[in-house]
Image 1: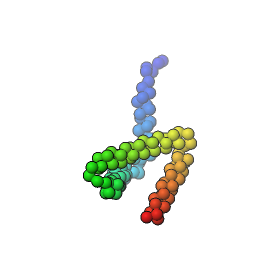
Image 2: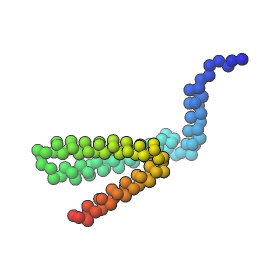
Image 3: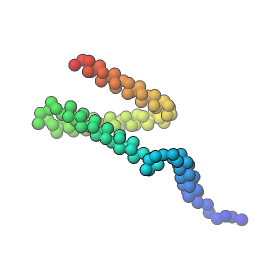
Image 4: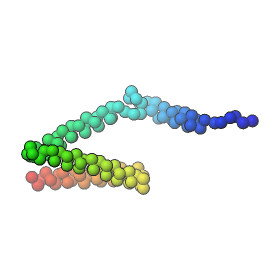
Length: 122
């Protein structure tokens, strides 16, 4: 009466595929739910920011210090990326999605306030 060994992995994959296709049925993107347009837009925005930011930071640096300043700029950027992703991951793990987005919004408002206050000082 045994049906033989069941393929749980295959059944799980089928259910994941079905639920994904149901979720993404009305998507206009080529890749369905994975929006290449969104990734392209974010990449372009990040590239535009990097160019302007590097120009601003490196503008007043002499030729002898450019390597050092460039290295410190990249170190600071990577440390911020890693620590920010870790912090937001920890907030998500302990508090959930809504608190994570609220926390991110508060951090963005603080950053905007810091930039605005620095511009008024000049």
